[in-house]
Image 1 (tube, rainbow, N blue to C red):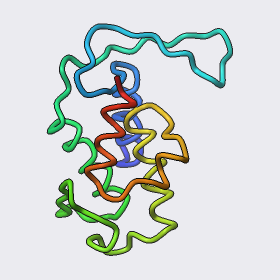
Image 2 (image 1 turned 30 degrees about the horizontal axis):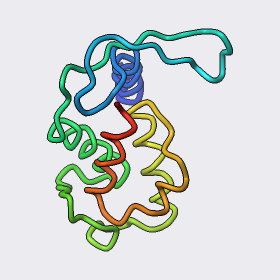
Image 3 (image 1 turned 60 degrees about the vertical axis):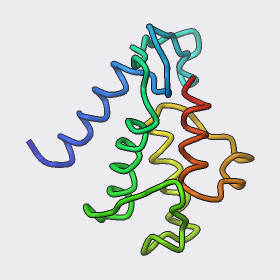
Length: 127
């Protein structure tokens, strides 16, 4: 199977079995906005830790910035990552939204100062 198809299947599998969140438990329902009245069941992750959120976020960063060696921390800012300009910031936010299964409000996007604040938003939005 082609690499692109495998990556798409992995993403689809993740979306079918989980609704992300730090500390989320049990099963949840989310209404899919594009299909009114249709609910998709997500299996919430049991006690997703901040570290687990970082693992997933690191993979998103590595994919967006095409750097398999990229390491991020709470203090990481755009100046620390080669190629992280305003255009790539939009791509990053979209990729994060796709990975974690929710939209980040623009008000939160424009106030993020570093990766630590992004993880805080992921944990907040995922619960």
